[in-house]
Length: 313
Image (tube, rainbow, N blue to C red; front, side):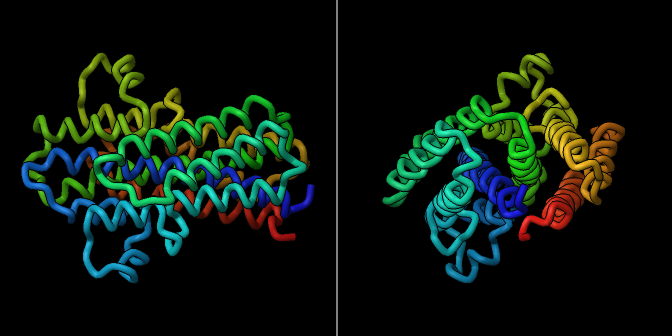
């Protein structure tokens, strides 16, 4: 298969996954900002930090406000990771590899791009933010379902899945990191009812509230929630689940091509780390520090996949 086809599928999936997860990140920040006794726009600084676009935002706006931050993350054309740009970039990559997609996959992606583009054509306020986020998540679920339900399980599928789960792992880590940033000004609340509500907001933002209750019997403990989103291999947005899936798809590619690349070793090391570490160790050594290290390792894996499979040749 041509490297540019693998590249198109990988980045199509990354951008479509990122669009949904930026929306989820906004949702997490918005829910937690509502718990403040005194509302402050500075809460959105942490959301921008976790999205990795704080410096870009500063080039456009001198101060952080809720309205400007939401607009920058949702629809600003100067932000390459805005939801609007991600959907457009994902659709452009899908068009580039159109012959590698089923008709259902392409039509759903194209239709979703048109609908989200129309949805974000006007400014989104806090009043209609929740409805907007839910609409974006529904369209992303439709695109994911059309692809998974119709695509042949071959190397094309494997490259697309690598893109999806590398991106999902990155974004789950970033959503968890919002909790760290938002609580920085109010460490006195750690362990309180307010603190637990923040953690519940994180679960809601990744559509994991009900499944968490099934596993942990309704006990909203920070360590349990962190365990669920980091180490629980049955939770489809956890870091551990993502790396189980990444390793599985890399193994299929190794069999297809008869060789392994550096990415195989990096993915295996990260998977083994997630299998052998404990949540007590993560929390004791620092959740923020753990997530920072994970994001760097995940970025390294993405680069190794790009180089190892010669995406640009």
